[in-house]
Image 1: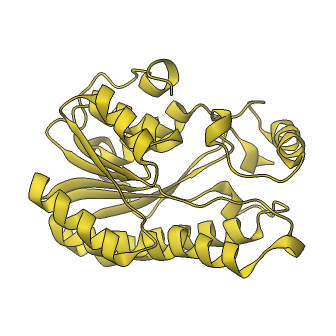
Image 2 (image 1 turned 180 degrees about the vertical axis):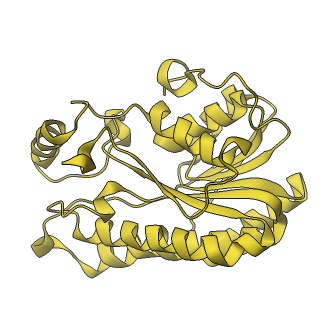
Image 3 (image 1 turned 90 degrees about the horizontal axis):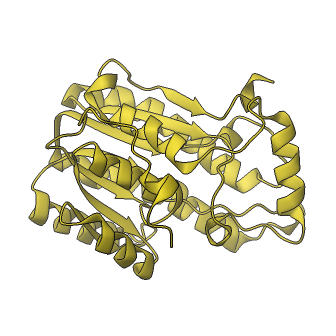
Length: 262
């Protein structure tokens, strides 16, 4: 597991999250892990969750005393409740919730199964919704919630019908909750990344040679001609979490290298 380089790239020297307490749901790998490093560098204390205990332990061993974490399956509401109780016990209140966990399986429509459909919506929509609902009571004035959507929610990408539908739901959720929670002083926004360059063991699941075909197709359409670094998406999350974005509410911050401009 990488311990330096991109995940720990230092770009925020302004301590924009100093004295803030954050929770990253889905923070043990990829964009979530990179965001965890960025938030620590920006001054936050944080709590990361995920479904891979080994990766959580490895991350915590290097992040130091300002990071804590636990394995959580957010498709199970009792585990969300246990997480919130643990965070409340350790932190009291939190200032930032980054709801980043997802199931991403790219398959032809004909190969879709009820199991894949149910799991995708259980994590990407139900789990995210009830995580927000459970954490809001321990969030106060000036807090920020960031949801991970995807450009797949807006583009008609083959083999992504289930995943794209969940991400369109997340985008809608961010817009609706931004109006419902603003009276509590909580801002809600979404990020919509394009393709992200991840280590092979952290990439989405593709059957056969689909990964290579999809990568070539994506790169031809991206204005910058390359996939994003995890740290480039993480920078957007830290911005939305910080006081630098206090007038940003209900927005979808697209971080896609220009793919949606075509």
